[in-house]
Length: 190
Image (cartoon, rainbow, N blue to C red; front, side, top):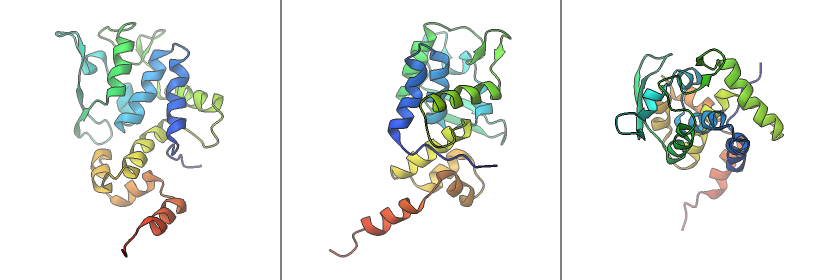
C-alpha cells in the first residue's frame, strides 16, 4: 500500500480548492479548504455540525472551533483561517441549518469517509495530479507547508497530537530536495 504525500505545490492546493468552487459545489470546496487549513483527520471534519462553526445567536461564522478528537479523545481549539471563514460564509448562504456541516441530502446525515475521499480524489484526477491524493494528504499538506514556512516541528507535532517527532517527520514528507536546500542555502561564513 502506498503512502500518501502532502501536496507540496501551493498552486496545486489552490487548483484543488477551486475545482469545486468553480463548479458551484460549495460543500465540496469547503471540505478541501477546511481539511488543508486545520490538519484535522477526516473523521473529525465529518463530525462537525453547523453549531460547531456558526454562532446562530449572533448570525455569524465563529472565529474558532473546539472539538474533542475522535482518535485521541483530546480537546482541541482551532482558530479558523480567513479562507475557512470565507468558505463558510458562502456556504451559509445555501445551507445554514442545525445539521451536519457536510450533509448528505439523501440520508440526512454527514457524508461518509468514502464519499469525502471520492470528492478529493475526483478533483485531483480531473486536475491530473501525478501524486496520489487522499483525505490524509490534505492533513499532511498543512504540516508540510507550516514546516516550510518556518514553524517548529515541535509545534506541528503538538497540532497533530502526535506522540513522537518521528511520526511528525513522516507526515512532513521531507525529501532529499528539502535537505539539499538546507545544505546549499545556509550561509554560515560571512
